[in-house]
Length: 301
Image (cartoon, rainbow, N blue to C red):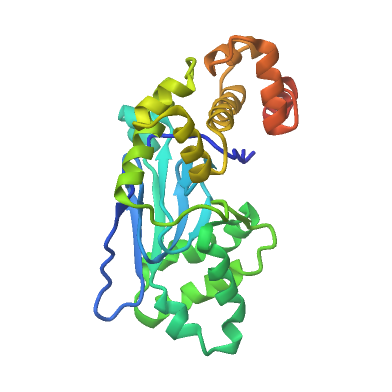
């Protein structure tokens, strides 16, 4: 079961600009990554990026959106959209059996502005790339359709590789179940000072979300007065800090209810809720069901 979570804040670092260098005879960069864990930082670049997860699981961060990912995850990102993939904690314990694997394709905006702009048959691909400005996550069914093509891309070269990418994009354009990731109000390519401030905020929240976090406390981390911080945070994420914190906690609760044999009361405490009634209200508000119902569905009971 693929569990979609609207938000969980993770170990963000400063959003770095990545300079992507293409070969003299190449209009795209295709790489297969096989690592102990995904180690790319929170970053952005002016190129499009198509990422297919062959093996691995964890959480994917795209702009102001976060959700679980697993093998078969397929995402298309637009230019200047900050992102990174973070594996679950067990990947950082040195277990070689969990080695992640992914195929990543990056290509410049000139791919559409010059290469496909005058090709009538490419209209659906151009529309797909426009929709990908804030990130597109494709259905598992669509991912399975293009999986073989994605895995073949790193072994291909020249025109064959380019044509295969066009064929993949053309197929992805038919996915009616693809959904947007970052909100349409998200600011692309944030400045260094802003991302450094948000880095401090997110790292603090990740480390302390199980405890009480007062607005005055988190505002101090950001170096701002409480009222100014509340305006800043809502403008940056389209959510109040309290809403974001609750979504983070409920996201963690979802994982615990799915993967670990804990009682509902234990999950509530583990996620920072000392009041079980408040936990139940927040869980239903965020998921549309009670913790008991969610656990039963997730475990197939």
